Structure formats: structure tokens, C-alpha cells
Length: 144
Image 1 (tube, rainbow, N blue to C red):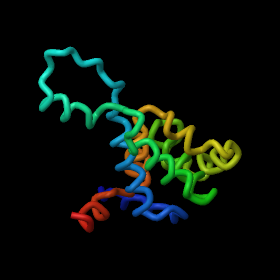
Image 2 (cartoon, one colour):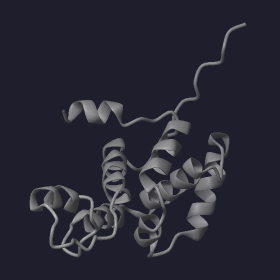
Image 3 (cartoon, rainbow, N blue to C red):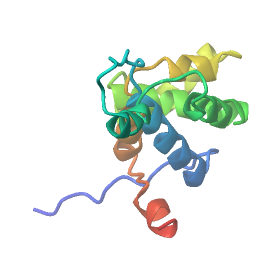
Image 4 (cartoon, rainbow, N blue to C red):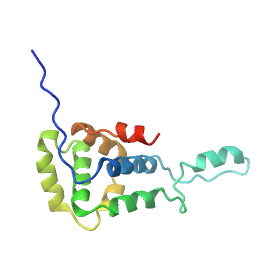
């Protein structure tokens, strides 16, 4: 018995480069935590390393993710939302067209804020990509 070949990834408006950049930025944002109150006896050397993970007002990570999503055209934003829903399990890969239709119907000017408010956005996007036969592996290799 031979197995069926993997499904061909759909043609997307959003480039794999843009998609992977958003996944990377989403992962950076997903690990952010509320700033901690430090006691007077803390070690300044250790404190600076922890600050990288804190969501401080001057940290550009959120703005970079927002700008990357907000800078997409409408069709790219719709695909990003549909891919998030696919990764979250709201749709199966075989329902990609239905996910796109639902995302198109729900689209508004708050797409970036909606996606940034989605817990584990990086994971969900990557899961959605995998379901469609897409990966950031090649993009990452080209940037190393």
C-alpha cells in the first residue's frame, strides 16, 4: 500500500519571508512577561539579562510585530488570520478556503491588535503553516 503524496501548499498572497518574520516577532513577543519589582539586594548583572524578557514600555518588540502585521495588504492579513485559526484548530487544512472566507468576512482595521492579543501567536501560526505544508526552515537557513 503506497501512501498519498503530501498535499501541495496553497498559493498565498503573503510571502514566506513575511510570514516567517511575523512568526519570529510573535515568538519574541510571546515570551514577554510583566516587569518585576527588584529588591535592593538583587544582582545588577543578572537583572540586565532578565530585562530582555520583560515587557517594558520602551521595548520595540510589540511595535515591530504590530508594524509587520499592519503593513500587510488586506489579502495578506486575511491569510494570516486564517492561518492562525488553522493552527489553533478551528479549521482543518482541508477547510483552508472556508477559513479564508470566514477571515475575509471578519476582517476589519484591527487585525494587528487582534492577532497581537492572541496567546501563543507564534506557535499557532507555525502550526497553521505546518498544516498547509509550509515551513520557515528554508527562510531561516538563508538568514544564518
